Length: 218
Length: 266
Image (tube, each protein chain N blue to C red):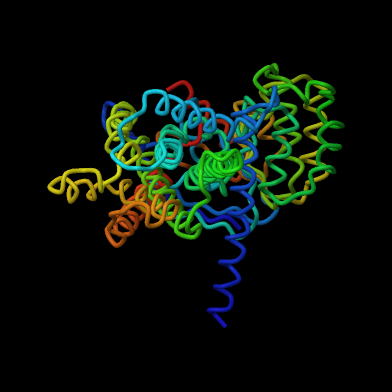
C-alpha cells in the first residue's frame, strides 16, 4: 500500500513560495490502478516524484509498504554521457540485479543493436524512450509510476509497452499520469483530477473527464 | 529482539548504500575518464604528473624551504598533501547537478554522490603518492619513510579534513553559487599557507603558533614526521586537527541533510 497523508509541496520561486500540492491525502492499494488528469503545471509530475521518494514533501508523509518503481518517463533517470549498456549496468548495480540477464532483455526489447554501445545523448527521443522503458522493466516492482510513456515512440513501441505493463504485470498497482485521456481511461480503475493544488477523486472516468475539461477551459 | 531487527535493517541499508556508492563510482570513472587512451589510469597519472612537475620546478629553482631536507622529499610530501585535500572540495562543488537525473532512484542520495567522488579523489591522490614514493625510493632520490604508520595516520587525517570540507562546500554550493566562485581563489591563496612549501620549524617563533591554526599544516607536519623521523622537528596539534575534522564533519552532514530534503530531480 502507498499512503499519502496531508502532503504539501511548496517550491520557492522568485515571486515567493508557490504551493504546488495543498494538503493531499490518498491511498493506493495493491493491484489498484489510479489515473491522474490535470493540465500542464498542475503538479502531476511533482506528485509522482513525491510518491516515488525521489523528492520529499514540504510537510506531510508518504508511506510505502510495497516496492515502488522510480517515475517511468520517456527520459530521465539516465546519464547522457554513458552508453545504453552502461546505464543498464548502473541500474542493475543499484537494484542488485544480474547484469548479463538484463542486457539480453534490453537488447531484445529496444532493438537498438549497436546503438546500445553509444552515449545516450546521441539517441533520438524515440530511442531514449525505448531504452528508458526497457530499463524500467528489468526490475520487478509492486507498483509502477508511469509519467507519460505514451507520448513518444511509434505504434510498435506502444504495443510492446502495453504487453509488458498491462498484460504481463496486470496484477500490479499503477499510478498513471498522461495527457492522453483515452490511455488513462483504458488502463485505470480509479481517477483523480489535480487542479490548483487540490486533488479530487472520481469513481468513474466520465465525471473525472468532465471536470478535467472544465479546468482546461477555465 | 527490537535491537536485533534494528541491526538487520541497518545492515540492509548499509548494503544498499554500498551498492549505490559502488555503482556511482563506476559511473564516475567512466564519465570522467571514458574509454579513450589510458582511461581510468588518468586517475593517478594526472596527480603524478602534477607532483613530478612541481618537484622538478622546485629542484631547478632550488626553492628555499628552510630545512636540511632534500628538495625531492619535501616537494613530494608537500604537494601530494595539497592534491589530497584541495581536489576533494573542487570535485564536490557542483557534484549534484550532473547527477540529478540519477536521483530519480530513491536510494541515490546526495551523500552517495559526494562519497563516490571523495573515494575516487582520495584514491587517486593516494595511489599517486605511494607510486611516486616507491619510484623515488627505488631510484635513490628518497629514503624510505622512518615510520610508515605515522605517514598513514597523517595522510588519513588530511583525507578526513579534505573530505569533510568537500562535503560541506559541496552542500553549501547547492544553495549559493558564491561558494564555487570563492573556492577557486581561496584554494589558491591557502596553498602557500597550507604547509606544503614550508616546515613550521623554519618559521619565526612568533608565527609558529598561528601557523598551527591552519588545519592542513598540522596534517602535513605529521606526514613529514612519519617520513623523516628525527631528522626534522615537526610541530603539530593533533587534538586541534581532529577537533576541526569532527566539527567540519558534523556541519557537512547537517548541510547534506538539508540538500537531501530540498533536492528536485530534473
